[in-house]
Length: 567
Image 1 (spheres, rainbow, N blue to C red):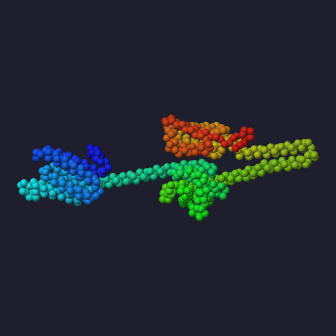
Image 2 (cartoon, rainbow, N blue to C red; image 1 turned 135 degrees about the vertical axis):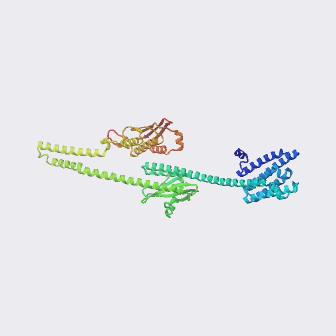
């Protein structure tokens, strides 16, 4: 009831003002009722007039309290004025016997709410003194002394003192509770801000995880650089981004993502060149300005190589934003690590090819080459002496040459079989996928069925890696989020395209909702499929499961006659 009445009073007022409003009108109602039905006087119209005038003055005074609630001097003047007015109200209403004597608690309540405790007691003493004086000079028909009057009404004085004391204690407690509430509200606001920052940090971490996944999937320097600038734009929520290559073996061109027209490229290159000449740029984040557009830039380099400059467009240079700086710096360092890894992988691949070439050359030299040399020498000798040899000797010599050539052919065939997994009948790609699926089946106590058809040699190395990552990502999502007990993986490798179908019996999801949230796992698969110009279709039904169908065109065509590859 109390909360309801308080809520009905001017919602823009403070809680103290609402309580003052409520107490004032309730005290006016009850004191007026007791005064109205008091039989000490016969003038009913006078009573009605007093009640109406008191209501009007109460409304005016309360509005003045509301208006000057922040002005202590004005509040003091209003309190003293109202105290005098309430004291004078006792004259026509019966003195100390008037019901309106209790209406005096209104200015005491205001004093306790907005002024000091000392002034509150001063106001009470002032009211008691004025009301006693009125009783002494106006209603003292028996000529009692002031002390006698106070003694006769000591119970009223005691009640006023106790009520004021209790009111002050309650208001003090209310102020403390209000302060605690404000502190809790501030703490709650800080916690909400911290929670938002944590959520933002989690989003950044997940986005960085997604970036690492995508970076690791790239096997081309150009694709990797495009991925870097796209993620730099997305993670920092900027309008555009660019990467300026700095490599003596490349064209040193600018790769862009977002709203950067080719006309701006020369201007960006000019700004970057001037910064590089005076060596103002290092691993710290600096800025350049091109056509009233601000770009935050930082260098991408490893301990041994300088790869280029990464830049993103910003509204204003956020030099003091630690999260922004850490995010940009982490992305730069990650790019340098991945580019360095790609560079080292290229070197390692070249060294591996060279080493394998040397091994094959040595093996051919030690076996096949020696036998071919022996055959060549034998034929040369046979040509020189064939006229002197008998028919039987000539036949025996040709038999030896044939046997030696057969041995050379066997050794050559053996070397070829050692180098070719296809000749050995080994399907390494299928074996790796099956081993992975068997592992997650045992680890999560689920049933996984894997079917593969077609020739895995039709797939490029990059496509094999992408298919493996898609299978790992989708099966992981089926187990973690779908809570499935069965997974079916079907891989069909055809001459023109490769089909991958992954089904589970999990709880499913609403595809549109996931697309709006831009889930990391699905987004990763989409990027991998799109990088090979493929298509991805997801069909999911709640409580029934999910089916993912992927179609990727093959870039290798197999020739049956030669067993070779035509790219």
